[in-house]
Length: 354
Ligand code: AOF
Ligand code: ZN
Image (cartoon, rainbow, N blue to C red; front, side, top):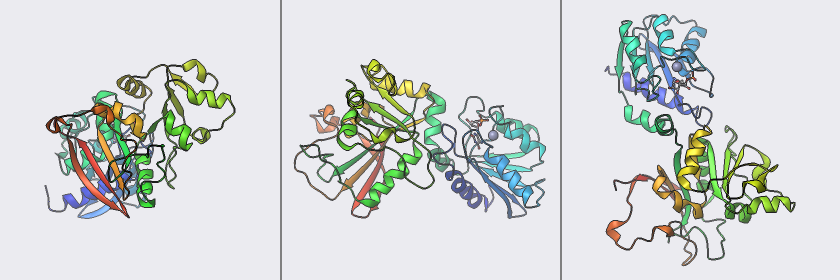
């Protein structure tokens, strides 16, 4: 590694993030081209199915009148070696005459898995792998899980009072956290392809379940509605805001009630629901319904726990299905970060080692 490598790779990681929400179920990728210590081109993967980051960077350099022959490319994911919706980037890099390629991480996609690196090395390019690998793996944690398991990455998001309630006894929950925390939730929605809630939330709050950030694609809305209560209400003429945009998918014991209303599957078991979502090409799901969260607890990949400065004393708790009696047998979380968001705070955690 050379002294300036890290700086350029950090920039590539920053660029990659610009694709957040737009590239799923493909990875966010960024690329930076450097020649004689100077950045001559940058690129990132902008949208699913469109040009890869590497090609965008090469085109950027050329558009600015630069010759990439002999240059170094910094790229956050191993250049691909296969024909997908786009041609193989490794071949293009070889053809363009790059001298050196610095890669943050190998591509976990079984269609690539080291073959891009090998191809470039065989062609005489100096290839280094593993710079800022941890950051790169975190950036693409969704892609990593989905490409290797075909199951969506599952995040559980909850808004809790400081004493751990998600709603009062009567079901009132608007609002526990403040404006800044709710803006942060919009960013979480951008990161995930699908948002999941239970029918209770839909009936009580009539949410839109969309992403209202400026730069945000439509979301897939997944509703767990065992007895088809929403279909009943729709048949009675009630309008739900979640139907205003995006794809809506119901999981229910009563799929026939949804005929002519929405896409519905006769599945209610959490693991089976995730399997189906994976088959439908959905790489990530943000579970926002506190009441349904417990069933997905053993399947969760990440937790976003927002705490607002309130106390309810009694009310609805999110993980009552656990029923832990021995404190030493409780599931553990590994806290990754704590962010202050105005009067609220966000605890981001992963499942712990038990
Ligand atoms: C991307 N963007 O910048 C890079 C990717 O169907 P394709 O041709 O778009 O290929 C998708 C695969 O290509 C993806 O799963 C990953 O393994 C590899 N690299 N993909 O969408 C990119 N560099
Ligand atoms: Zn590629």
